[in-house]
Structure formats: structure tokens, C-alpha cells
Image 1 (cartoon, rainbow, N blue to C red):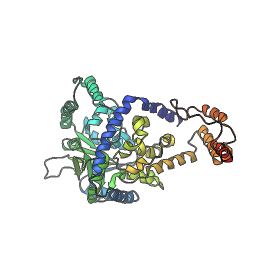
Image 2: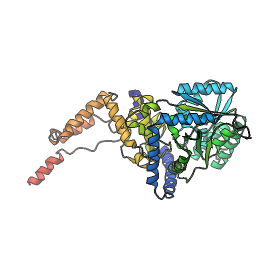
Image 3: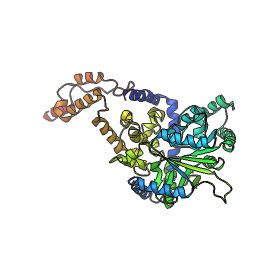
Image 4: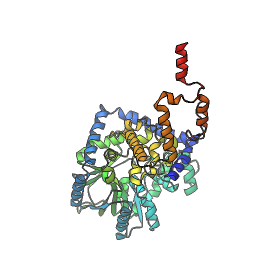
Length: 456
């Protein structure tokens, strides 16, 4: 626990890297501008958020019934449904599918859940070649990195960074423009799309009443990952379920608006099974892997179950003042920012409880959430759990006890003069880090000065 916290504190010093902050703030600012315009298309955005929150809360409260309905209807459509309790089971099930079709290469559309189970690493160790086809994911894969942001994997890189990376890896011209780099990647991926035996996607929504998988994306790589390979594998969390295909009319635009500021994402697809007898295109086999990975545990929590309403739009990351300074890699986990800080301690253990303390409790994340998850309240709940389960350090606990005693009564705070208080503050220089200092405390407290003033 202490080791992970110390790593976080060390990595968070990237906040003082001015170039990193400029790149991150510039990229987030572009999203902020687009989202501000996107919201104007709604006559009543708050009502849309309330409806989405209501629907998702009902679903999360009754996951088993909706998932059973999805499985039944999906199997009617010819989809093979696999249940996985954790990442290990999910990877093994996927390997079985790859072995059955003698696959070597698989193309992947953007999927944070594949990052959660470290699919690429496991498949590479087994001799397979997983290829990321989302441009941002492709960039970080080439760089040997992980996605930096839930929605924008390469948000931490400028166009100059990408040009330099591609020059080093592919010998493209050093001063290549974004358009030239995109064209180059398109050429590379076309060969992969047409030669891969298997395509892997995530899902934005599992549609229970029709047994289908809804996918929304901007580049067309998701459709390409499904169209050419003979096998389509979907990896999805069990919380992605929605009751009806009619609900997509609410969720697709809301996800687009709060995620990227678009009225609607460019490609919105609904997959309802493998290729039929009378169809010329599409995969011959479709497999949906339903991953739990402690989601059912979150669903049973009295308040934390609300975190499962998340649409993975990334809005809370863009709004968070901590994320905007320390960036995605500092969190050292799949899901970063406010939503990651809420769910990671439950999914991976309270050794990650320090993430919940890396928050100002400003409430910006809660305000922007399209499904009204009370994120800052859940972060406070994590802190409470951390203290109750004795995950906090002895020094922290003693410090908070001393703080409670000192500020409980004015006379306690006034027992010592300013010189002693300044001395005590100097004994703890790490509270504000090594780049900030407490302002000096006055020799005479405010209350004593006020009493003296009134008397005179």
C-alpha cells in the first residue's frame, strides 16, 4: 500500500513538467470547447441526464435478469456467450477461440476492458499478434505505452511527439503532418484488417431485448475489425447492459455530446450475430465474453453500485483538476481520474486507496457526469472505508487525531503561540510537497487579536 502511494507521489511530480502540462491542457481544452458547443444542441440536457441515470440505476439494481435476457436472445441470434469471473478466465476463453481457428493475427478496436485484463500482453506471450487499430491506441502501442485517457489514449502526445515517434519506428519524415501520419497508419492497418483471422471489439452497450452489441466510434476501425476477419470477439463488462434497443436513442447522443461534443459519433453499429446464410459479409462466428472482475461485488455495495452506471465518456477526467495536472499515467491503473479512483480500490483492493485521497472534492466530476454518478461522494466513501479498515498509515491517523483535537475548540488552538505553531509546521514539510511552503503563522492568534481590538 505504502509503496503504491509513494510511486503515485513520485510520478505526480510530472505536474511540474511544463511541456507535459501544456500538451495535456491544450488537448483537454479542445474537448472542452467542443463539449460546450455540443451541449447547446439539447433543449434540456439535465432532463436527458436524469433519464439516463434513472435507466442505468434500474439496470444495475437488477443486472442478473437483464444479462440472462441478453444471453437468451444473443444465443437465438447465433452468438456464443461466455461468462468470465475474472481477467484470467476471460483471457483463457479468448485463447480457446483463437486456437480453434488457428489464428495468428487479431485486429482490435479501442477497448479499455481489454486493457483491464491485459489482453495484449497475454496474447503476445502466447505467440499471437494483437494489433490496435484505433489511431490513438496504435500510437501508444507503437510507443510501448498504455492508454493515457479513457477516451483519448494518446492525449499526452503532441503532433510533434507522434511525428518523432513514427520517424524512429517507421522512418517516416521527421516533419510529417498529422494528415500524412494518418495516411501512413491507414496503409499499415489495411493490410492487417485484410489478413487478420480474428477481430476484437469492446461494447458500448449490450442490448438485452434483441441480444445485440452496440458499438460507437469515430474512425471506422471498429467496423473494419468486424467486417474482414472470420471471427468477431466482443469483450465487455457486465454493467454495459441496457434493456431495450429503443434506449440507444437516449444513450448514443448523450455519450457523444459529453465525450467529444458531437451530436452523434460518426459510426454507430449494432451487431446481432454472425453472418446469416443469405448475407455476403460479416464474421462466420461471434463470441461475447461477459466479464465480471468484481463488478458484481460493486453492484452489491450500498452506495458504490452507482459507479457501474458509468458510460466511459471520459468527461470526469477532463473536468478533474488533479487529472489535468498529474495526468493519466500517475494513477498507475487501467481507469484513471475520478471514476478510476472510485472503482479501482474495489476492483483491485484497497492497496489503491491513495487514489481516493488524490482529490480536492470540488465536485466537478459529479457535475459533468452524463448519468449523474455522485463521484465526489463515492471518493469520500472510499476514504471512510480506508480509515475504518485501517489502510491509512499510523502517521496519517495520528496527524488527523491531532488536527481534530486542535481545531475542536478555539482554546486548544490558542494554547501555543505563533512561534511554536511555525515550528510544528516546519517539522512536516512533506504535507504540501517539496515545492510549496505554509505561510507563516502570526505570533498572536486572530482570536486574541480580535479580543484585544474589542477591548481597546
